[in-house]
Every structure is written in structure tokens, then in C-alpha cells.
Image (tube, rainbow over all chains, first blue to last red; front, side):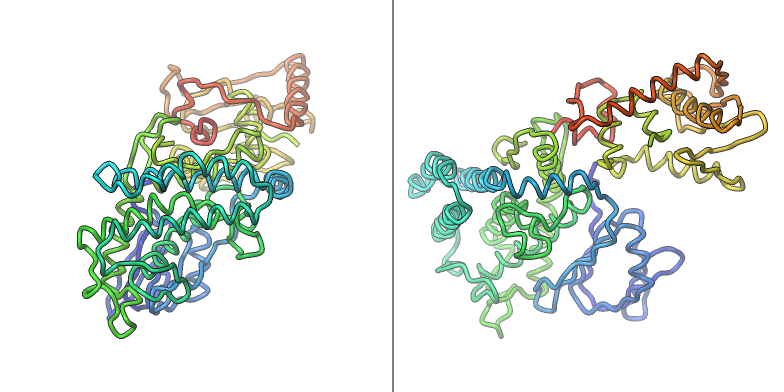
Length: 335
Length: 161
């Protein structure tokens, strides 16, 4: 069972070292002890110095470390030498890329549409009638379009259309200061793009950690090209969780004024980047959502959204190994 | 090649056995397994663990092979594991009695069980091991069947998702 908190965020600069088989963060002449027992994942958002000896301890304890740069940009992950490998699964996963790629990629795209539908339906029910066409399209047309595609580029065009229409809906949901003309990635050019980029990279790292605890190979992906990035399977599995975890967090932070353009973005950079306090607010809201529990309809037990990511990994393994159908997490069905 | 754990799992749950022996192990998820490992570490302090091909013995004396378990939750499976050790040793000309120590007794009244095997028993077990080897050749694991014990299993999420 995933415990509620195994993640530690380090916002200050300092040195990480090993003392008495504990991880110690030294900052401003003070030592802060991080017990290994309750730590599975570390996030470093500032200048952190660490040695090979520290990496050895982290590796032995199976602790993953994600590094972010000064501006909150994702740098990379320290990925301890793999513990869980099943040759049989790796071979089957590669074969699935060859034979069942469209089935898996199609299931992911349908999953994105389902979860966006459910997130926006909430606003529709509260009077945003202008969503009706988009909602109908998501529910009725997208599954048909996906089923009719027979190559990955066609499918990616459907996916692109889903997201583009979703971003257009922000005009109705969010205040004008967070209006969005178009999605701009590296670097983002305005507050909403900054929030999306930061949220997506946080989610990406969370999925890396969950996949690490399964036997799946991070490099063999289905919707994204395996060559795209080393951990492209994390990109695949994060897609259906974006509406659930990233965008619901953004809507909550912006609409409840937990995050404002004036206070939480860097003015010098034209408000196109979150500042440190903005990142802290966002991470807190994001963590809360990850650890929120719901009653899982298939397993019949309480389950956090974070654990639901791992469960999608298990579903994929079962599809690959045992031909059990693969349906990614659905916020509506709670499974 | 069979191991003590595989024989234990085959008796306990065939699906778990198949997954485990194809390296789809899920023990990572289980606090109980972690406790078991720690107890194992504590118990073996000061004694040498003996490893022969495929088997790792907690304790080997002139008379006994001892296997230590956290609890007596599945005694039949623990016995099958110990028998496997006895048979493997027998084939090497080492004849011992088995001794099973359960640190927590929840189901049985006694915490130490002694095993003695006849030659017929040994032949019968060998046929059983060939059956396990055939079973592991299958392309896919058997489908999960829910039993109350599944709720505590480290494989629960994977089996029933």
C-alpha cells in the first residue's frame, strides 16, 4: 500500500551526505535528518551538493532523486540501479510495441478524452453551457475516431485536437489574467503555460517513480515514440492523469486565488515562470491531490491517486503478459 | 531450477508461484515480507547461512535442517519448502530431519514442527517437483481466484486490478 507521504521536497540549497546510515541535509550550519525508512523519493529544487557515497546509499535504499533547475525546470532523475527486472516481460513489452501499439496508444487517447470530459462536466453542470459541443464530441466522436485510426500519426492528430479544444475551454473557466492563447512549452511564455509546464513535469517525475516500482521498461512506449526520451513510457502513462492531477490542481489554485499572477510569478521574466513561493503552493496542492484517497471500484479498497498510477502500470503488464484488456484510469469510474 | 521459495509458493498459490518464478515478484509492496526479512537477519546473526545449489538453509546441524518462519499462516507451504531442502540434501547423501520454527503461532498450538521423511515420501515429492517444473513452462499464469487470504497478499493489486 502506498503510504501517504514518502516524498521529500528540498527547496533550500545545501549539502546532502550520509551519516550513521541516514541522509542528512546540511544547510546554514544546521543538520536536518531525513530518515531512509520513510523516504522513497527526493525532489531537489535548489543547488544541492552530493557525493558518490551519498548516491550509493540512495541506490541501496532504492530512493529516486529528481533534480530541478533554478527556474523550476526539470533537469533529470537519479535512477537507482534497477531492482525489478523480468526478462520475460521486457521481451513481451517490446513485442507489444510491434503488434499491439495501436491498441495501447488508442486506449490512452480514449482515456484522456474520458477524464477531460469528467473534469469539464462539473463546470457544464454549473451552467457553462458553451461546453456542450465539446463534451458531446469527447464522449461520442472521439472513441469512434480512435477506433477508425490505423496509424499512429492519425491518432496523434486526434490527441492534439482533444488538448487544443481543452485549452480553449480555459477562457470560460479561468480569470482573464490566466487567459491562454496557445500552448507554448520551452520556455513557457505566460503564467498559464508556466503552470502547465511545471505541473506536467512534476507528474512526469511521479510516474517515473511509480514505474520504477514495477517491472516495466521505461524506454518502451506506445503513444510516444520510444526514441523520444529515455523514459518515454512515463510520458504515456502520465497522459490520462494530466486532467485529473495537473489541471484540477491548476483550476483549484487559480480559481481559489491560492496562486495569483502578481504574487507567485517572476515579474522580471514577464510572469512567464513560477517563483519559489508559487512552486511551493502548487506542490502542496498537487501532493494533497496525489494522496487523496478514493474507493477503488475494482479492488474494493481505498486507494490514492498516486497509487492509481502504479495500478495503471500493473494493468499494462497484465495486458502484455496475460492479454487482459487495458483501460487506463478513469476519474468517473474510479478504477 | 526449483528453489525452496518456488516450492513454497506452488503449494500456497500457483499464480503467485508462476509470477514469482518469472521474476514478476511483488514482495516489494509488502510490509509483512519486510518484517520476515528483518526477522531472518536477526535470527541468523552469529550463524552461517548455508547455500547449496538452489537452496539456502537457515540452520544445519548434525541432526536437523531448520527453517524459520515469521508465522504459521501457511504451514503446509512452509513444510513443502522444508521437505524440498530435505530431498535436495538427501540426493547429496546428507540425511537430516526437518525442523520448522514459527515465531508467531496464530493457527497451530505448537511453534516447532519436526519432519521425518521416508524413502517413499522422497520419491513422491520428486514427482511433485517435476509437476511444478512442467507448470512453470506454461506461457501464462493461471487466472486469479479470489480467496480471503488474497486480501493480505503483496500480489493482490496486480491480480485483481
